[in-house]
Image 1 (cartoon, rainbow, N blue to C red):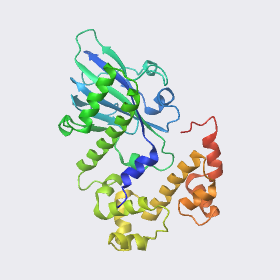
Image 2: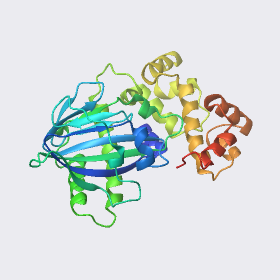
Image 3: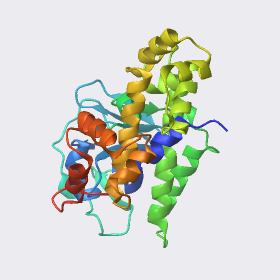
Image 4: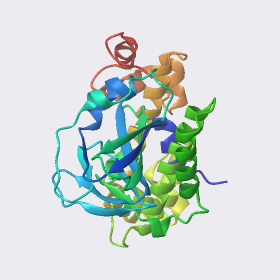
Length: 329
C-alpha cells in the first residue's frame, strides 16, 4: 500500500486540539484575537505553534485578518488561521477592540469548553465555537509552510451529515451538557476537523497552484512525496526516484521543485531531520540509533548533516529541548 504523505506529516507534527469557548453573542459585539504565540503560555504550554479556528453554529457575523477585508460568515461556516495571525470577529464589518488574553481560561482550570455570553444586552443573535490546535513540529513543516494565513470553509461545503456538521453538534452539546471525557472527545474532533478542512482546501486548489499540498495532487510529484515519506531511511537517489515515478531525472527535479520549492533530495534531507528531531526530543534513542533510523550510515555523517541544517549538533540540540527553560512536548 503506498504511503500517505499528508498523514505522515500530520503524525510528525503531533496535533493537539482543544475547544475553549462556546459563545452566545449579542449585537453589537466584537472580539479581537492576538497572534497565536501570545496564547501559547495560557492555553497550551509546550506547544511550538498555535492555530485558532471558529465555527459559526448559529447566526452570522464578519471575520478575518486585521490587515485584510473581512468576510461574511454564516451558520455552518468554519474560519481557520493556520499561521496563528491576529484576527477579529464582529457583528458588523470594520469593528475593532484591543484583545484581552486574560479573558481566556487558563490551562488546567474549569472544564472546557466554557460557555458564556458576549456583546451587548440584547437578545442572542448567534453562537460561535472558538478553539485552538497546537502542534509540536520542530524543524521542517511542509504543511504549515504551504497553508494560507486564513482558510474559510463555507456551510455549503459541510453538509449536516458530514464530519464538520458532527463536530459542530458535538461541540455545542458538550458545552451545554458537560460530561466526563468531554474535553478528550472535543480534542480529537478538533484534529479531525482540521484534517478535513485541509483536505477540502486541497480539492479547491486551482490547477496552476503551487506548493506542497498542490504537489500532493500532482500525479508524479505526489507519488514521489509518498515514496519519500514511505521509506525515508532508504538510500534514495534522483535516478531511482525518477524511475519509480516514470519521469526523467531532469523532468522530476524540475517538476518537484516547481511544486514543493526545493529539489527532491533536499526535501528528503530536511524531512529526515524532522523525524530525527522528534526522536531526539523523545529522549529514548541514542544518536547512533537515530542516525540509522533516518538513513545515515554513520553517526558522524548524521551529526554533520544535522548541524548543517539545524545549526547545532544533535546532542546539543537535544539538551536544549530537555532544558527546563525550553518548553518540551
